[in-house]
Length: 355
Image (cartoon, rainbow, N blue to C red; front, side, top):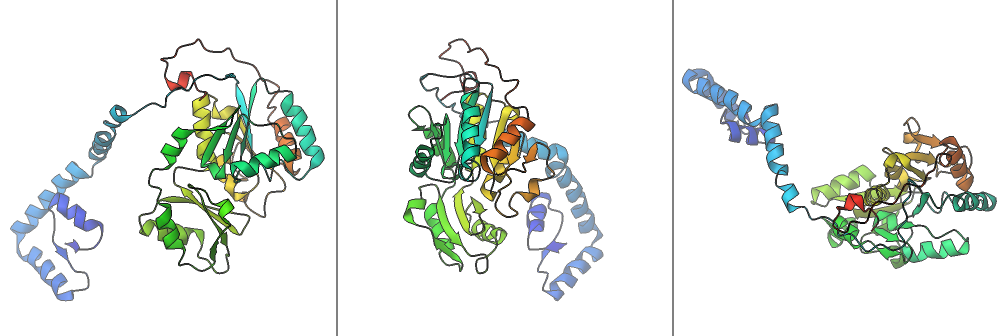
């Protein structure tokens, strides 16, 4: 006997091992119990069906087989990302990715020193920037502060990826993150809530919905996530600097974009140094990369990473903290230029990682 709410409905449906009752109906509960106690034949039949059903549907072997049955067809449907024509392709054995505002701006002398170090190692190190800014805003800042144009520019919180030299957008990334993305429905749900007001149009993109967030009035992030899930909307919610909230596709983020680039370019995560300073950088710092949190991080954001191996908390701010991490990890001392692989237009993506 089981309640007619929740999982027992499916279990009894699969196993045929019981009676479903309304848990709020006392008379129905009593009648079901008496029916089983007074009818040993029915009781034993349901018991035997339950044992057989558990072995068939809920054993580890059954679970593994169901999983394999679901994934076996996937390779046949897989379509590899085409290899783009080579454009001055560089083969490098490591990469440095950094946030823009928190990590490079704010300390003029530190930025100057960082640029000098970076320029001395461009032959063996890919340089990438991952920022919440839109592409046009990021380019203005790069020009204003004479920051070398990166090999990879991840913008709008990981919803856009651009490659040097022409900063062409990666169209396959757009196809990837568009999965389950329903921006109109997200706006409709969140428009009814207190403490959320849309940011200026200049902050909105097709894959990023940005709000001003008042934590004193708005629901908490977990509550917002649960509310959206209840409407069958799967998204990434990113809160940063205490009063900004961005909603982006579930497949998008700075960290996911960085790992996508690493796979395409064939750079091991263990040889990627990542710098961040706000909550928007958390998933970029987690994982197998080398990480640094600069001293000027916003408030207590990223404090939850302090005990993780592979994340260095610098005691210097902005670019000075990034330089500290370069020394801490001895990041450039063993830098080497790997040989370019042989030309093979038919090779899979992993052998020609540059888009």
